[in-house]
Image 1 (cartoon, rainbow, N blue to C red):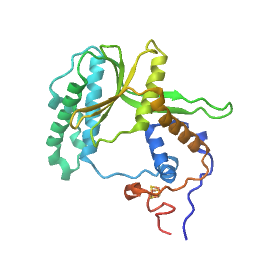
Image 2: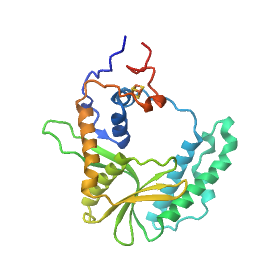
Image 3: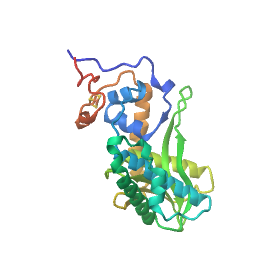
Image 4: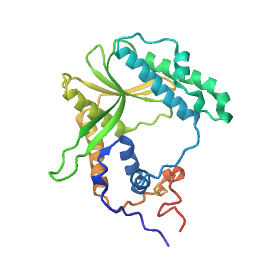
Length: 264
Ligand code: SF4
């Protein structure tokens, strides 16, 4: 006998009002997955991952550097020392400790490549800041916001504002994140003196220094944005969370509980 997909006892909109890119990605992938992860908060502890440690340390080291720059200090150039400061050896279990020195050099490489690809002549607007944009709402409905943590926003010498997302792992474009970041950055700029600035969205793959920049028109962003707003509305109104099986089931943490993949 097949299980029923889960029903939420109340509409999540009453308490679920802030939407980050991972929420939208998870819901669009599989509503039942979204339910287990974000409504029921069934977090599954992941095994230790050196790649994850390298990713976090790279983000932290770059944030440190750009905050230094924002405060008027020169950029440091001893990247190995900087990586040593940000890659916490005490996070490594005994069986993995011998990999730590190599990972320090990997982080240093990610940082050095990121800085050299971004170039000079930049003035820093924000670093690792959670920005938001409030969606228009029905009069009695809850206040819903899309949010994004934007790695870096800078003003280039030509006056263009660039928002940057670093990726230390595989190259895959996250269009929801790109468009949500763009919307929240535009909202931030609109509240200040930069409302007319041209905006460039950049994804920087620090493993090899590839920089992918897009100057998307309103028309190009629109279908992605409409999909995001539709997902927010569907989450707000959901009473049942249907499974959406696919290749992603192979690495789903909730297979055992799933209404189609779980034990009956
Ligand atoms: S196993 Fe597949 S269908 Fe079931 S919750 Fe996970 S992703 Fe969704």
